[in-house]
Image 1 (tube, helix red, strand yellow):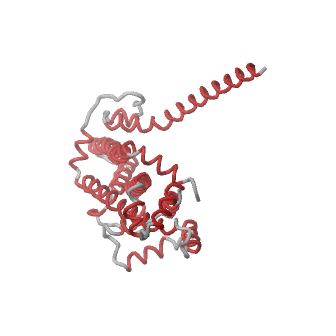
Image 2 (cartoon, rainbow, N blue to C red):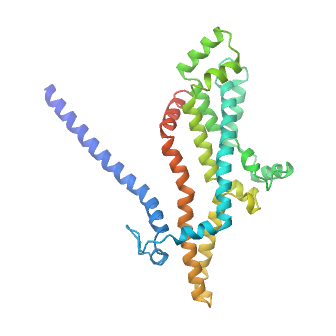
Image 3 (spheres, rainbow, N blue to C red):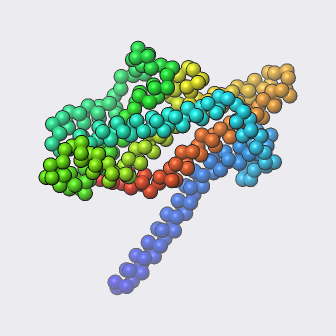
Length: 302
């Protein structure tokens, strides 16, 4: 009887595994195909892309779109700015998060409860866009690169995840041993805690860098000067230009000139999307081991 149950159970497990793999494959195809389409569209003849004839394989391969991108000053400047905001902004935000998470992870911190409640409130209730804009303008941060490095520099969720990581059992035992040996808080934080917290450090750097790289809302509000605008703003303007061009297509007398402009915008649009996405994908694949480890350990305790 037990053998029959074991066979039935193993058969059910095998069916479940097959169904799960099929669903995962379908989900991967749904997610990956848009990315694949963008890549092949960026190197295909824009006539086929505009006509909707591009499906699986690139057609009439050309790299003229990427050549136009590298000749476009605003795009290269936006690329440089995005790297600056992602690297410097990610470092500043991750550093502030680590410093703020350490006292919140201490059980004997007298302000633990009120500070935690205050931070949680800010997750659900904010001052509003207009008051924040007024504050930023009064501080002289508008139209400066510092506004993207300071405003919303710390995200509460990342702070709570880091604090939970510092509360994990093996780290708490080291903290108790350090206190017995007379180690100060600064000594413990810099000499013991940070060296063994590489997973959460890399995770926070990745979180903030990706957020800075993809964010365009703050730049759209606070930055009017093209010299400081990140790549996402330039990409948004390029997409808007392409949409406007297609809208007024039938209203223009010089159809040939407009067609050429539309082809160039279509080529550049997909090429810029590839350029904007590729760096963060490479970073994530490189840091995936630390990313998964930091997230799983940081979610053990609340």
